[in-house]
Length: 256
Image 1 (cartoon, helix red, strand yellow):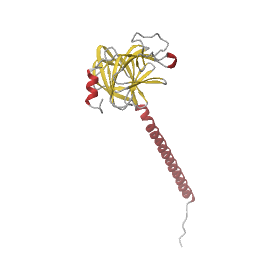
Image 2: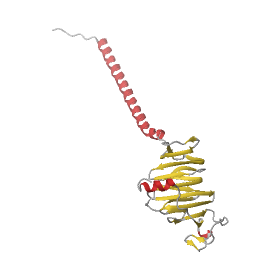
Image 3: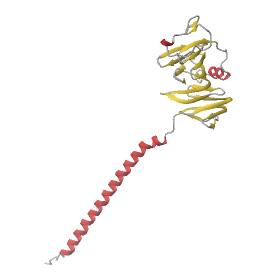
Image 4: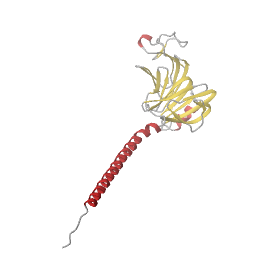
């Protein structure tokens, strides 16, 4: 019978090689696992971070007409996108019109306004001049002037016009539908075909206007300052606000 002689040193060396090999494979597998985990974490972080870094300011509307007008310091052009925070202004003989969802806003000459958003409603703050807006529903648009907020009072097609006389005084007209004007908790309605001269500082001197013209018509005294956030005086209204406003508002009730 033949005896198998085993070389102990060779066996030991083989075992050592296998052990080292297993350890190496284990280390490699561990490194691969760690690398995969890190990559997964990086991908997850990028998915969360990219929308925050890449998302631009909220788009509110598009310029549909511009003549001697600016968006910020740049010349306004038809088709330009208007974002929240953008300031639009016009030269003395210029004008600019913006479509914002179910509303349109027209700035007359020597006017300026900054666009913003009230919750989900497009809005603008008129800082000077005259703005005319048309809307298809009550949540289509809101116009701010100092502490006052003017918006459509119903879901009917509405045309309103606001002129800033000075930081504390403005004229609000409604040529179609009714408007709502609010200063904090003092909210009043301006019916269709009416116009009011509004004084936002109740302690200011009475503005020059029809005496005895109150909140509910002629022949009554103005609302006392102690009982209201503002006072107003009824004034006359012209038959035509602007050619643009009448054309756009009557063209389609669903596309003001």
